[in-house]
Image (tube, rainbow, N blue to C red; front, side, top):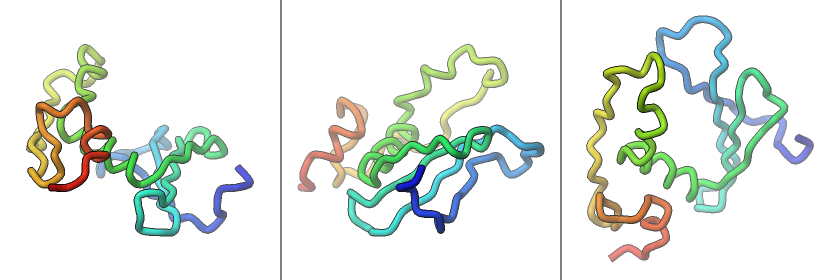
Length: 113
């Protein structure tokens, strides 16, 4: 973890009414605004184990979640009964992302029209 900046501001992804220690996922955004700027991800139960990606890939992941690309991972999971994706699955047309795109990451690699 020596190459992880020590002054990161970690944001915890937990429900507002959550109590207890989790485990929860935490995110920290490194310096820079471009697509290659680092994004750090860790779990509260193992904060020394940090995964690093970049903003372009993180944005693609978030768009994929919003579009329902990962809903099949929680089908049949205890506690997830009746949970539905209420996010509009149709991202703006200018990104080239939509139900016919193979996945959000491929769509982000497509130049804007």
